[in-house]
Image 1 (cartoon, rainbow over the protein chains, first blue to last red):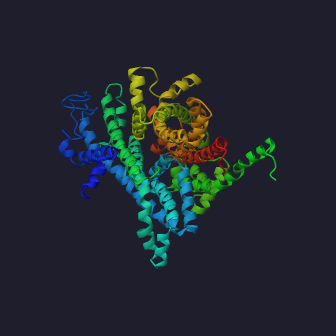
Image 2 (cartoon, helix red, strand yellow; image 1 turned 30 degrees about the vertical axis):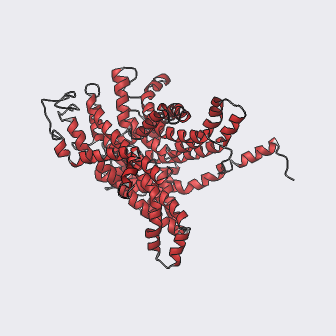
Length: 277
Length: 326
């Protein structure tokens, strides 16, 4: 086997990873090329075609404003994918930095951050997020800020635990005895070794962030109408559930499918890195 | 020589393991203090005149003067915080601007539906998760195992608000078996109204529990305990239900405790879907109607409940597993 072929073979032998990445890739394509793929404008209202059941012209039917549900689901991929990714990136960066510093320095810095983490974890996640959104006012920006303020704790705990183990190992001691600076040891030697576990966690966390973001939008506190976002679409459809089930069904299926893609990829990565969840 | 292990001595050792019940609440103090600081700032950080925020826009000048004195609103934050703690100690959580009653009394009336919903969710989730995990673990690699694994992985990504809507569509609209939303007045009526919201929570929760239970059962089936029991001629069914399942349940209790925050957050959404008049729905209404004292009170209640439930989970774990020392 040549070296160039090896990775591809390894990928092919991992159907779960392949399926997960395939699903995620499909949603990225939908999001990027939404204007080309979607047959209608997502907020264009056709007053002559309200609450039309799924048909050839409208594969997912239309909603109470006569908007094409299929096009709205495709455009929704943009908002929801962006929500899931941005909602994870900031907690990941903040939590990783805090966890590294707390684990490396120990002492009162560590004790302080650990107490803060205890307090944040005492609040139910969504309740603390809603509280922060109460202060900031509804909106997507508030969601990102609340996510960053609340979500970092899991990453900080994961990374800190790893750093505590790693900093006593020979390579870390060797780096210190060579006179490397603390910053260099922390971020060049320890952190890269500590990241595998939290990279796996990123995938399952993305599922939670996606569900949270959609739920907050469903409650009316996140993304605001008329933007096509799956959570809002479910909320808008629920009022018409007795007459027009399709408004509610399809955006929910989109969330489930995207989340499944992230879960599969996460499970496969956990397998690949040999990380216990 | 070691003294013989009498029943009495074992009893004393057993109690020794529960000593943490006395000390653990002391460790809660910093957490509770932190919770109070966060909830305090929750209302203070909202832009605008705090007196107006606490009383609503149509407050009289006398009421505003009174609230300024009661909460020390003209003092620095640190002093205001002590006023806040003092009021809290007196059971004074402020007044709801929307419902025109004390927040504490308002919360008291809303605890029951939320508690019932969480309990229904946990019980139904276990009723779903234990059989599915058993089916899956005992025939590892079989068709049922694959189905359970795919469903439990997919189940992690089911948004509760959508699942709830789908259950309404199926059981209330199409089959007309169960009410669409609301909460009953008598016990039977309440139970009927709890089925769909409880099931919504249970389906999401059981996905998490099944994955953990399945892993625990597979480990248990290959453990020395199981091998020894089989060697004694114990039938496989008895080995499984008497030795494997109880051991797999211990980490599940912890998993439940870890997820309690997520579970309570879930009730906020599910109560909104089904219009259950619980704490979560109260919080969402509070946010929309700028009833800040209500939001503050509910957040405080939820946080304290989470701390309490984690403590109870610790006790249950010690009771279930004699090896655990806390």
